Length: 124
Image (tube, rainbow, N blue to C red):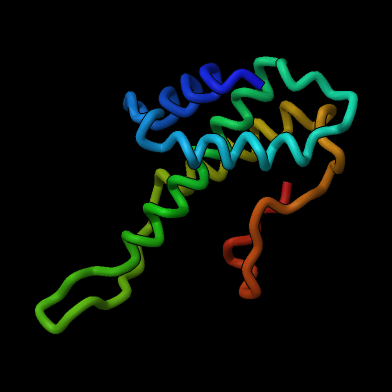
């Protein structure tokens, strides 16, 4: 995997030149994708780099969505319900890139993240 290509894809998805700021998150996504790949899969393919970038973008949106759920009020912090469109977009983008790379991944059906309630289940 070419880290610079992954950083470029991540910056394309975020719309900012912030690859250095989120470099550790990008490395974590690359490691996660590498563990999901077939042993004989070509890790240098461009679509793998974009999958890594999409996963890093998704993880960033998870973090930002978790922060967004708390609203500061006069009485303190309370949870608020909002539709985070960037998070929804990141989830769909990740699903698309998983589909594009499906022939390179170990399983046709796997889960990137899951919570007991099922709301955050991302099954591809």
